[in-house]
Image (cartoon, rainbow, N blue to C red; front, side, top):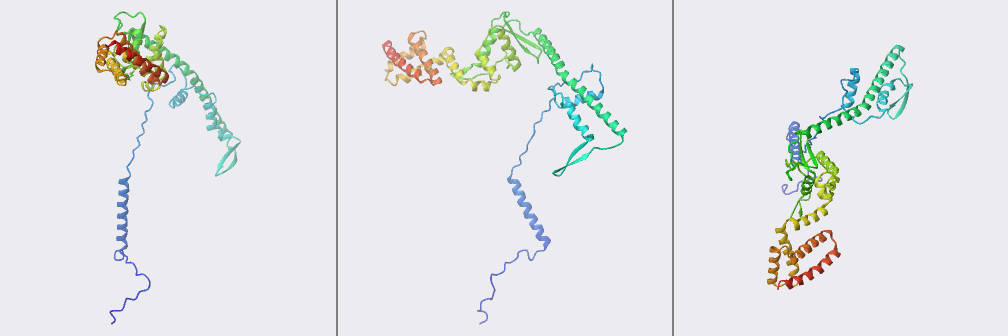
Length: 382
């Protein structure tokens, strides 16, 4: 009878504590182990990004105080201290003195303002022994005079080094021009009457070319194309086939202008900063038109197939007979001097150029000429 009665309880049954049997030390160890596992998982998930700072210190030439300037070592160290900070431009007149005044004279002003928290507090000047004050003032004055002398040297040195650099550059150029690798021009095989020198300072030599030869070689590289696709390349030295540097390009263009050889393509390349990527990007339409012209004038075998495809595209629309089509194909491939071949060549070239220019009126006019030329082709191939 007593066993059938329900168990008496007030409210919800109490939860069992799983750590009740364990000691406090054991519980702390287990909790630390769980945290370390979780931290390892989070570390494994987040990838570590390593930032590498590429710092290339300047190791080139700097201005220095020449040995001929006989002055104290303090002034030389001050001058080199400023040069180590790459201050190569002319310094303003008041900069150096103001810097020294701020660093030394602020101690001896009648009233100084010191910030304590947010409220400024005025303090009187330091009253020490007169001998100490005179000693410090003399030291400050000497320091300021030294900085003024350094400033004078800094204002003169850029002029002196500029003159020296021009003289060195002129001497190096003359030395390279004397050491000419080739006497005759590479194209004409004669001594150039209008010589243009490419100076190579690395090898201390130069290469001479006829002005028109070098101009054409540079233009050919810049207007290079493959089946109406632009494939511009950097100008090279025709003798060594090495790309010309920016200084060499400036020198060559200035020498060409002395002989009144001007080129729009070289001027465009110069305006693009002698960068082939910017050149092809800025003047894409011009280069595309020049590639079309080059395709029809210099690539005759490929141009024949282009003209035949162009003829086919219009002949299929008017149901041109296949026998007469074959005769037109044969005429275009074998007889380039025929009037019909010349007309199809000129119309195909003009159509592709007008399509590139997106000139709709010109395209409409060319379609009229094409229809009349199809009739002439039909009559002439009887």
